[in-house]
Image (cartoon, rainbow, N blue to C red):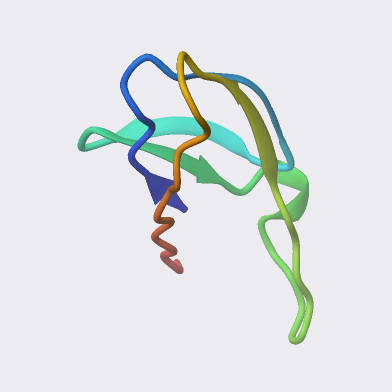
Length: 65
């Protein structure tokens, strides 16, 4: 997954994923323990962030592979 984290916002905690960045986007990639899922399976991730203003509306982009 990737998204644009608003300027001034800081991710303070992230779970069930590994945080990174690419092309100016914040990314969340699978953790070692949830990288391969069987047919019909699912996983989730989450994070908390500190912000200097109101909570932003984020647009997430998903990629497979």
